[in-house]
Length: 321
Length: 83
Image (cartoon, rainbow over all chains, first blue to last red; front, top):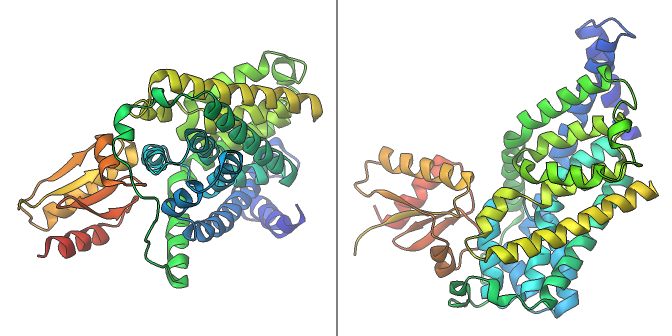
């Protein structure tokens, strides 16, 4: 992470020269860690969210719907999952997206691939993973997330569960051809800037608290303290992490920095990845919202398949890494 | 025709916040139209919305996606109600 060397210097200067924390103490370690991580994460957030927002300005949901309504099954699942990466992480849009896709004739399986990938692989999670664990783990997260999204969609598509979608959904059909106003570059930049500021405004307190608690753990909790409870050899760690992750969605931004510190104290990497996937992809509030457009059974099928994929990834990476 | 201002959402916290801002905007503009909060997903389906929350004036969506900007909301109301 050499590009963060200047940030590292700045953190040291702030810790030792500005705040005058005595060097080589536990407090100094924690303060330095907190400042460095905070600066690094916020720089990454600003840059990556901005870039993703600019890309997104080329792909509004109407356009994604148009693309997906013209793809056959498997290609559709793959493209839906990839496009899910750049869409924002907000359960508010789950329903309109679901309705909009299905009504325009996008197959149900393809729609589910998108619904899995969209919250699971989002730019905030990506930034935090990149900042906490480096590009290798971030890449592993993206690739396993994509595979889970594609497979879940393919399986749900094969199950022929159209009858488990509320019938009113099929009563309105819309034309997928979107006639959208063309955006010019200044609009794209303004959109990306506003969106970036909006997200940072929304998540910064959670991130600060997460990094703060993480810094405390980093400084005060003995190394390998958690290995006894959540090391790679503990079979129950992965399912437990997934269960804990389900109700935590709204605080995803604060949980990831915390998880960085937990890994350092002995929680296995696969367990950590499974936990983060559960936090982002299996969201209780989102399930409650989705109940208004589909039957509970379909939500359970959806959660079951995605959950199984997450458990599998957790065990796989505990074994591999 | 009756003039209507609706905020249509899927019931998420962001949607409620959008409704509050829109209601405040209408109040500050001294409108005698009440802003309605519609959390019925059928309405989303009917209008073919792909993002929520949305601001609809006289049944036509004019602002789609979350806009925390009070001035933008006021302008959208002004332009579309032909005040």
